[in-house]
Length: 180
Image 1 (cartoon, rainbow, N blue to C red):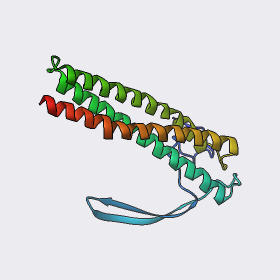
Image 2: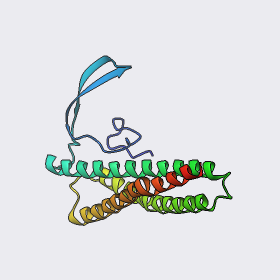
Image 3: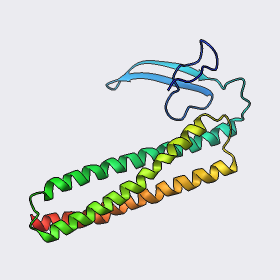
Image 4: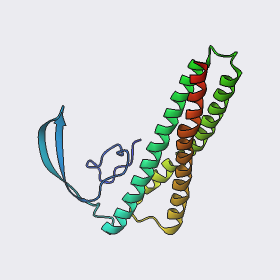
């Protein structure tokens, strides 16, 4: 969305998405199709009005990256499970008279839906990420406690996703193979 400009005429009208880089000098390369067209240096400076140590900014960025990784992993897992559920529905649609296959499909679908529900809880990470991006300071102890709890919940949901893929999907594939 549009943000209020910090410096009239010099601030971007839209906030970039995701964690920002730390102050420093970076090398930027423009490449396309494996061919490099241009390289230049880019210096990012800290807002002179904000007095935050590099250590605090680094801690903040570490949490931002962890949260962004959790959001991405949860999203990818949800999409993978949605795809598997659709593929399963397509494959067992004509096999309604096979009770074993129908039961295996229902079991897998139930596990997948429960896992999607757990992974959807990662949406709370988005508000945490936004709060971190808008703060010019190291997260305090209470914020860190919330972040640890949120990240642990996503890690548990991702572990459940792995279990569904490794065990429940294998069981489902065995039932599909047996039903030909």
